[in-house]
Length: 273
Image 1: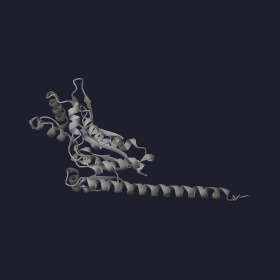
Image 2 (image 1 turned 60 degrees about the vertical axis):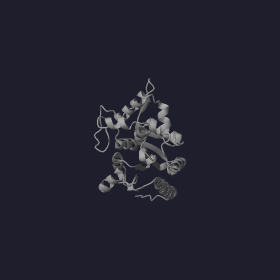
Image 3 (image 1 turned 90 degrees about the horizontal axis):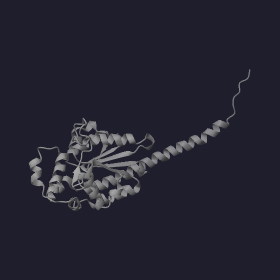
């Protein structure tokens, strides 16, 4: 019954052990230009500007990929991702990173194909061979969410995912995250869903400060061993619950089928004058 489970993971400091943007900034010598421009541009535009800087320095897209392949990803997260996929769970990434960074890292660790969808800021390599990052949302029509940056509202993404699933195919949702922009999607979760905030990070604090706003059950985690263990337990528990529901429904249907012929064969009480 793991096919009834949808797992949505944030990427930076949740699925991977670091922040992919900051990893590139630090390991490709962009710290100084980053701090010079930090206050002048929104984050998404700033990251695109940093990639322009790399291009001007003669760095290639392949150089960026080699750097990203060094980002640490805990072995337990690789294992639980492969296990969840093999059991039939639907896995998605919703992240304010970007498509190139996420794909490069997940392919390097052999788990890219475990995810049915990567929802993030799109990237292209232009005709100069320069990697470009674009906002997920059209900046000309900004969203009105106060919790999320202008380029990506994760809450609206969750609503789109929920609305795309028919009632008969309804799934139990597990959302895993750490950041302030993970609070908005947390508020979209229903009573039968689960949220897994990283302890002592902004999402955890937001939930602590607003407990009545959260309908989903909360399972905190502090390291990737713990995250993988809890995630695996949730998959097993939800699968067992869904199997019981299925068996109960099957038994009720069988009982109704058995009762129907008996009632149909009962003699009619014909009233005559």
